[in-house]
Length: 277
Image 1 (tube, rainbow, N blue to C red):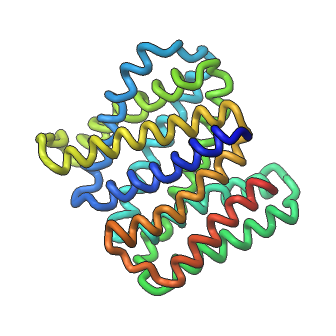
Image 2 (cartoon, rainbow, N blue to C red):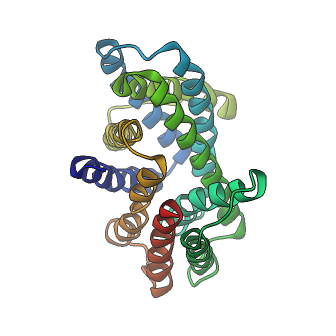
């Protein structure tokens, strides 16, 4: 993996933790997620019109990823209802590589290498330290965060395959953002029976920043997966767990307990071990 890819994916990890912090800080997180996704689609539209169109073979994967990400967004909103950033984020992000590894072992009969076994132990122990340590959220938030990790794993693998069939990573990333974000106002309407109100205020400005960060962050990941192994990209991206813990403590004034620090470090290290294994 080239230094350029490593540097950009690490920057993407910081951006991903940042937009989650913006979402967590909102009073109405369903509204925040809806506006952020819809604005992300608008930001991606000019890029999609300029960049070469993805190959036809990649469109089913793009659509499947968009559907998975819409469900992921709803699960993430629910997890943040009572769970703090430093609680929900590590569980959701750490669960993704854990579930992929265990699922491959159970369903496909893949043998777990020693490094993978170490990763399973580290991630499981780290999740336990955060989920059951001091300052934990309700059990429902923890379970929903775990389920969110399953959707993360699903859409990343889907996009990893899709972008390699597309022939044009930038065009694929742009259209994926549009297919993901454009339906979100309809999802909001189906849940609330009204359209999301929009006004040029501070909250809207925060969501606009979050949208730009979100689209850029995942666009970098999609581009990187077209060049490098998905597992390695996923491992680098999971360093965002540590960034989220720091952002939650500094900007959201969340209590950064010793258990959360150790748990986040174990999850990040375990995610790397799983990918290397």
